[in-house]
Length: 520
Image 1 (tube, helix red, strand yellow):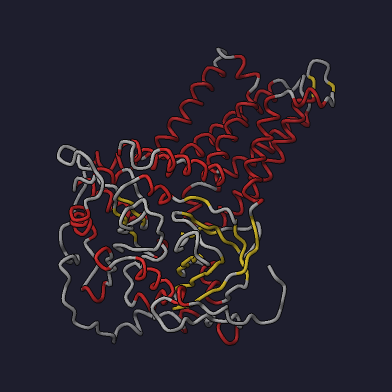
Image 2 (cartoon, one colour; image 1 turned 180 degrees about the horizontal axis):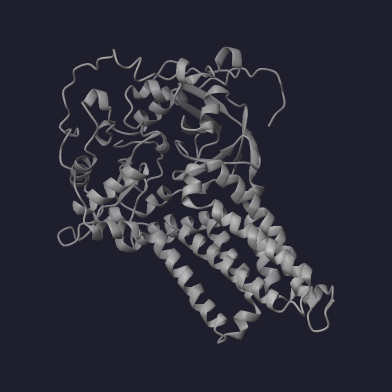
């Protein structure tokens, strides 16, 4: 980050296209004394619901017909439906990757496959290669581009839904191969110990260190750690993973250069490059390094329309369906946000960061001049929208960018810049922004979704025997689960396939317009 101690001036003036629906846009300077919110946010910024909220009486409003009725019975999904939603494509891909490896491992340990026993290290790094490749952002962009180029619109709907489903859940392959790789390298270390008479002690020590470091890397990625202690996950998974990479190099090279027959080291480069595990580790290193080549420290303008939200503006436009990772540091924890842009031709793209944790709170209290990001953005699941002719998107919460959620006073909360992007690009008849105060309660999302599906004529053949709807949902875990379960009851079979974004998108879901719209 820049070490310039001088206070930052106001951001460049927004032109008419960026200004939105207001005559002006307030951009806060980064002078802590003049613009930062008080440190004691509980007392000075956020409302104390018990103390300050008690005297407030909400105005009488007419209940919207789509508002949820308190005490209304909830739809209960069958156990089979719950299981199908739980056993999603992520778990299916994990099962396939892990099962294939366990079968091979069984043949190896039972003595029926001597090759696998002899080259257990190669099987380990081959699995790590696959795990890293499917998580590689450049490879991911290629997969999305391939599917969007060759299968858009014409392929059977079930096939396009499967493409989207697999792309969304590639993490199942990542996890399955990573766990399998740890099993294989453990097998390699155990065999080294068994043959310690002919092996070198240094190889065994490095192998044990590699094994332990890989286990720490995997444990740091457990859902409970990742979801409840994000910084712990980021730092341990990244730095322990890099440490494991260096140790893997050492373990591989030492194993290839040591001859157990005569118990000597033979530093033969030609022999080393002929070993398959050497090239597997080389590829593994490439997949790790490639995304970091695109990492840059870039200037950012921050608009603070409310104490709850920071709107980040970066230079250059973006296509739809991309996400950005940003950080205050080059190598520490990165946070992903959906990108809002009018398209590749635009001057800027935006990120909406709701105050939810230390990082997002610091964007409001101490807005930075620059942030670290990867200039090559990674594709989000909504990037597959060109595959479909017509569809429905639903989104809730600030995480979906500009859908504006169920907050009241949406323009005051998110500012005229984001509101302007919505109202300039989405016709009123295709837009539903839900204000829970104005409409008399939270929305009955499924009732709205069913009516929108009928009126919008969302893509879905064979509606009589098996009605399908192209529905993208982005919400929190509970919101996703509820809508998926009720959607399955209501006949929207594809809702068990796509769990990404809740909003009613452009006139055709495959259009390149990325201006936000939606049921939120």
